[in-house]
Length: 611
Image (cartoon, rainbow, N blue to C red; front, side, top):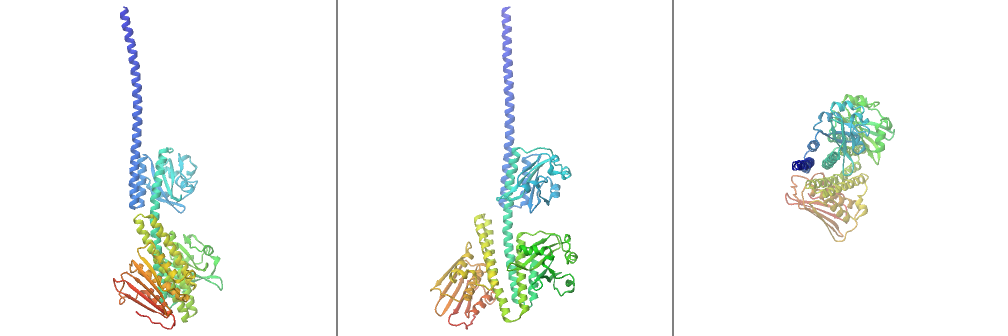
């Protein structure tokens, strides 16, 4: 019996031990399941991170290829929505104070409704983020004061929560917003914020790259537009004897360059201090104030009578009337409305920092203006003012002195602005080439040189209009000024230029030095821009009898029988004639060009001009 009891006791102990082992095994199984769940969660996070990384790599390749920004933004939204299931991504771009549509593949109707929304730090989520420049989180739209007045919009598109991160440039300027919205109330996790911040940085890089390319293209377009308009205007000024024709040409150029409907010119009468209507270009017809239809709606007004004129006089900058239909108390408003005019750009015509008139450029639709368009409008308005000034001179007198002065202005501006813009264009083309090779340092260098050359040309043009000596010759000898000019125009370019001075330089009359400097600039510009030369050599020889100057390039040359060289060569001949010198050109197609000048020092009566 005792043995039986002992066996039973042993069995009980064995059972208890087995139960304890079973509980321990179950506990270990639970821990294994928990560990497996953690590993699975980590694996899913890893897979999402790998998907996000692969997507970011593809977006980076798209940016590097220069793919359209719209496509890059669209794919960025899709990538975030894939990485953060259930989210609705939206990218808005900031234009002035308004958010414009960027991309929203899952919210196409919503982005269409908010396109053009004015930013406000106390309104919405994306709007507030753009205005504040910091992320904005809205865990529950229905309980957020920023969404008061917008709840119907949120309900319509099924939005209950969201957060937005500002897209910042490298200079911390707000470019737009990257927003995520959800159909249920919730706040972001650290992972959510990390993803959206990474994507916002990538999108910022894409936007800045596009803006840089557009800025380069716009700068090149501006320089080309100004150079083209300047060349055409100068050609017209050189040909026209009727002053109104020169003004008409300037107005037609302005209207054409800005693709405008029409334009008008008001000039300040210094006797009465009234702004007086003078000219209009309407329906393709040039009209002046003697036209009956124009005279009926074109009174003379004080400068303060039109609200935009004092502002223009104060700032010296163009003024935009976004919607003429909303502006009252303007004498000619009914006529503008009858013509279908909606937007007007009022551009000042300035002399010596003072307003002398305005040009009203009219458009039959609402439009905005880029900075480069405003700069182009201002440059063309200045040309129109030059035409007006020349018209006034021509109207006062037909004497030869006035005609000569007009030719001098046209010739000098041709040798400053026109040649300067040619150099600017060359630098911009070099910058575009460097950008295509992704050499951003060289792009910056070329753009900086283009800016310096543009500013230098503007300074020289102003001095030319005032009949002052070139600034370079105020401070330097002719040889130094010419050498600096050649270096400035060819730095960073494929052309190599060299100046050789034989014998000791001597002081020449100021007008001679001015003429020789401008001639050197003209010949060098022709060699760079038209001849495609890679080598340019200038030689100056001073003797007791004469001054000899030669310019040789290895460019394509031209046939003198087929072309006379244009306005530039004509200007050189006139300058050499003024100095009583001899001018000759030796050239042949494919053989380069040699230009030679001989100026006698003992007489100014010799005026020989060899073809």
